[in-house]
Length: 324
Image (cartoon, rainbow, N blue to C red; front, side):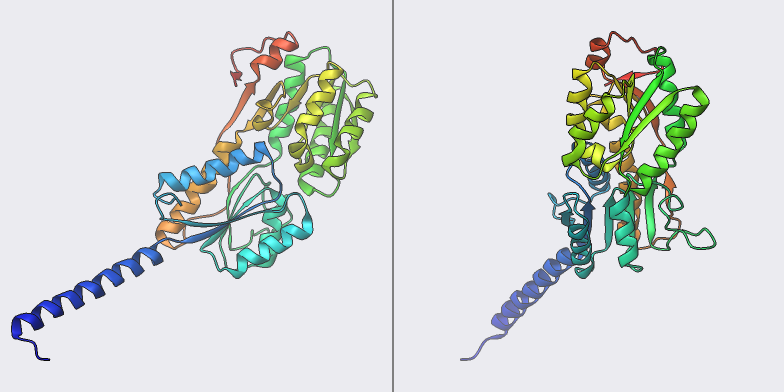
């Protein structure tokens, strides 16, 4: 079978169009980067940071909905072995970057990869997380946003402002979390300076929260202070219920806990914390370069209060507090 010249031109055109279409399809596939996201625990407060992170990516043009981003998501459900498995799996997929939500997720990722960029959130400074080298340098592949514990001390002063008759402060904390232990030490120091008696009881996991909280309340505390602690995050509703039964208000350094039943807080809003880390990650996805990026402190801290809880305890915060 022979083809005339017009036929040859026609089929050549079809062939070139086919190649161009395939090339465009491959280009679209390659242009959608894959990232990993690791949560240590399922929690409504921490979910705000995750939402902020992905909203920042979306605002920069990266989203699964528009097929400009592929996400490998894993949640360790508060279990350390599961966290290790999740981290190893994500690393094996060779993502463009890994986002880590909370200290333990960050520490595990840094320990298991030195080449994939890691963007942390809801975590302390690399120094507090014991991730710096002997010269004080953070890991070369660690970026994102951290918090110091200075805001803990400021948060304690809310007690004098909102509950001036309080004398005894109570808290629970995870001994296995360096972030929680460091925050407890700050709490102890500030309570001593302000003349408060501090009652603190360790807790191992969220299944113990109710029992430990009840034991703490039996010590006749005047206010419960909720530390930045994964067990507290995971079982906060249990703490709120127990404290409400004893008419004990809760103050905290975590704005996300205010919407879940705490009276007030001074600290970083977790959504904005995650958003700030997402902005950094967006820069990397656009440039494929970490130049100019480094771990940075959260930019926004606010005093906020829960209107319903304030009404419940007949407390009227001043104008420096924003209602939630």
